[in-house]
Structures are given as C-alpha cells and as structure tokens.
Image (tube, rainbow, N blue to C red; front, side, top):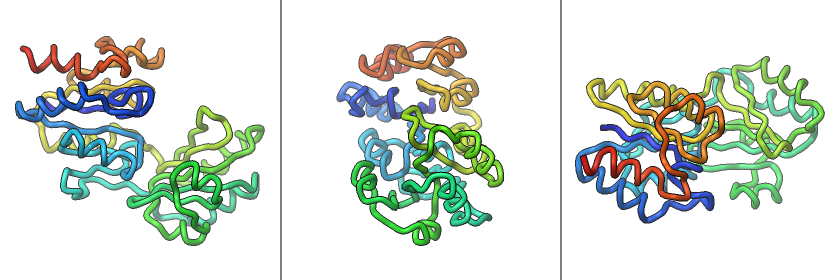
Length: 250
C-alpha cells in the first residue's frame, strides 16, 4: 500500500506538531513494507524535516510541483520558467508597492526585512530573486483591487490564489495541483493500492483519484461532502488511528 499524507491540519496537529502517535504508527507501516508519500503545499525546506522523521519514501511539495525521493533525487519538477519573472514582479508592484516573497528549491526570500523575519526568509532584491529556481511567489496586495491582480496574472502562465488572511496572494505555475506530481510518481507503481489523507480543497483531486481517499474530521465542508471515508481530526491522531484499523491490525 502507498500511504499519501498531507501535512498541515492532517498529519500535523493544529500547532503544526507531528505527534508521537502518528510518528510511531507510520514507522510501523514502513516496517510492514508500506510506502509513505508526504503530499504538501509547503516548500521543500518547510516539509523535508517531517518527511525525514517518518522515513517517508517520497516528498511531493510546492503544491505538486516538485517530487523527490528519500535521497533528494528529483522525479518531477515544474518551476516558473519561460517568461520574464521580473516583469511580473513589476506589474504587480505598479498596483501596490508592497513586499514580494519567493520560495525556491533551497530557501525562501523576501524584499522586506520585517516580513522576511516573520516568515523565516532571507532578504534579497527583486533582481536577485528573479534569477532563482522559483516554485512559489507571494505578493502583498491592495485588497480592493483583486480583479486587477487577476487580469495581470492571466497574462502569464501562472495560477493566482488570494490567501485567507486577505493581505497577500500566492502565485504558482499554471495548473498547479498536488495530484499532478503524485500522478507521475504513482506511474512507477501501477500495481500498488493507494490511500490518501487530506483536509481541504487542495487535496480534493488526490482524495478522489486514489483507491481510498480519507477526509479528516476537521476538513472543510466541501471535502466532507465529496469524500465518504472519514478519519478523526488532526488533533486526535486521526491518521494514525485510521491506519491502525485499516492496515496494521487486519
């Protein structure tokens, strides 16, 4: 069995911590010969430590745009390319002269020192950032001009998401979805059954396309409606307890 697990609000609790129970059960799954895939929108540097803790076989990060094996060999990569990123930066800054952040294969960077400290990034100029291998771009925005930002984003091969907090947006390569990276990875294992755990809309395609898609109790309402199988919440070790009954004690 291939076990596919989202991190935030799925494997990790509401404080962003991997519980001992989840860790122990996943390591036991590994001992029994099952494969584990971390499936996260997080960047590589913000997800690889959790991947190591549970000895995951593969890591699908950056919202499906980078897939690595446990030795950090690249299986799939879909970074920003083939257009002028610096022009995109300037187009957005013409609307609101705020900070810009990027997440790359090796680090995170921001143009403003205060925000860089807040998000754990290094300070870098736009020009220097534009030369990096970028998987995600984050802009501070003027909330009243969302329609203008959408029009600008449509000029480029990218996808724009306005974040819940409201004062910034995230831009990723066009068509980004966790399932894109997973689909390529799973082609290597055509005869393996798959089970996946998730909690929000970014997990929906994954949960629908695996053999057993499991929604957390704390999932968004849309996920709860669409996905029939349910686990306990992320604060109740839902992943571990479901796997114990589904795999370990069968």
